[in-house]
Length: 556
Image 1: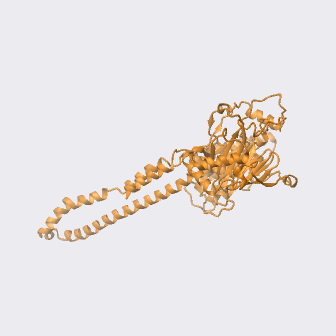
Image 2: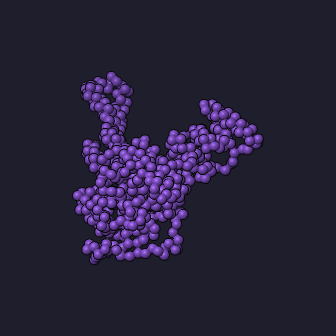
């Protein structure tokens, strides 16, 4: 039984895993861990059953020998006077006790340990745990959810008993603290303290929580509250190594500040720390607030006048023979720049086949370093992707042909079909699909172009080696519905497009002149609830000369 389980585990892992690292970046690959854990639980049950069987056998031996020794010790000479008893005593001590020793020395855990050893090399590592914790914090920020919402599992549209304990919240806060992210450290340590004060049992002590919380609050610039929390810590543990020194330092600092401002000491607010008590520090993304607002469905710049310019139609690809009998349904999503959505582009069966082909090849999605041109992973793109060729399966060839029929653009110079699956809090922050040119002072410069120059002036021509020109257009297939989050947003003009399984959206990245349309800077919002699968085709300039002729001006 143990041997068969051992080999079954090995076969399952060989089929399901191709690489190990950054598991948290793909929900699709994380689902394999569910089955791995189920198998380990079964292995654990087998071990328990074997231990119970062994214990029952030992208990039976003990009962039999206990009864026997009670009789023999009552009158040893009388007992041994019978030759059979003398023989059986010799036999027991020479043979049967050795058999009992062998039974006791048997280790039923061998099978379980073997299984654990095989699976352990594919377990998530420290990086995965840290990445998943940071993903929760990213969701917390983007969708303005407080720590208690996560702790109690109160996510939109979800009724789940997935809760975070005091220790879980403490570990979340510690992850942020170790990354010098005191903003989130405060939120999660406060939640840990709140649940502990409410009577929840925990391994972590209140002193440990207050130690991290008080210093994080100090780092956020709230000296009065840091003093109050440190005093609570000293009251609980007067011998705490750092608390006494921190308290004296905080009080001297407060006294100095009050003297400089000629103010009297004001005790800290008794209001509990919550989302909004402190301001989130600014980061590298200038449009962070607009981007996250769009992810929440706020700030969308659609109005009645603009909506009146949007239409739906049947599209036959300029009388393409493959679309004449069944034209594609096309809906306008945005007027300028023009973004359209195509309905029923992929069937359920095609989607499942694409996912089946992609899953073994999924690897952490990369971005091109703007200075070196080298592909690398980045925290602002959390997903795994795979690239599929037309030769891989007839379904891929059919999808490629369909994209060409719908758009009227050749796919001969396009990149391979990229399939992406987003992990915990999976996202891709605002970016351009096309390669930016070095700054040209002769071009007309507006606010957006100047910002782009400042951010990307050192970017090399990322597609030069392909010899196919720049990415002229993006065709994005949604291969799953997403319960909450996961929108595609365009911060420059305030658009948000929500995933709908089987549909696709299409837009041009370049004007007809070949100049980049900087309005198309877009992002994939973090997935709050659900698993997001997409596939996309990046179409390039070469081969489109007669399919999309140049315009007369730079912005045609």
